[in-house]
Image (cartoon, rainbow, N blue to C red; front, side, top):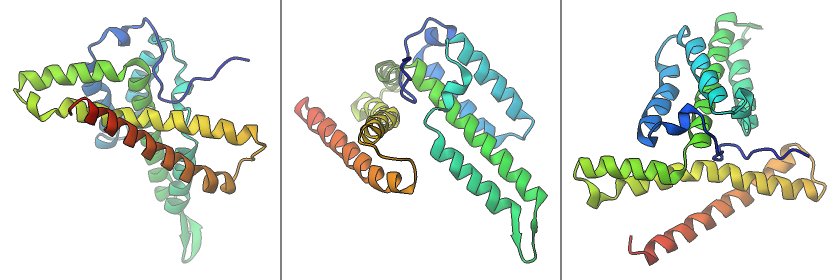
Length: 208
């Protein structure tokens, strides 16, 4: 059975995107993620093609970037229904429906862009680039690069913990549905807090 990749986890590869310095990649991809919300709807297909191009060049199937986005899908579905339905009188607001669809597309593209960044860049590479920029600005004593890299590192870590917890749930015969979310979300939050405490203790030990 082919192993599925954890959402937002780093994958080894040899594409062009892997050779770009992490700092430039971080600025470009996060800038692209924000641009889908700033510019008009005509920018959406352009950003989509950019994501698909870099994804294929990195050896990643574009639809794999959406792994872990199930909750985002239900959120987008809720937004579209909220925007589209009119209750007084009962009817369908086509303009609101289109706004909900375009907002959902923007959220999906932003999610895919972030997934592409973390799939092709390690936390070490990000911290190194941020540290060099920090040194250039003579702000090394603030240790901003460490804080930002730790913050970014918690995003893929969440998916890693969720995948492990979800696998344990399924191995015990657990089923999909609201009960699963009620049970797993507190466990994942608790595990994330434990990871944060372990990291804080390690940093304290190293004198940070």
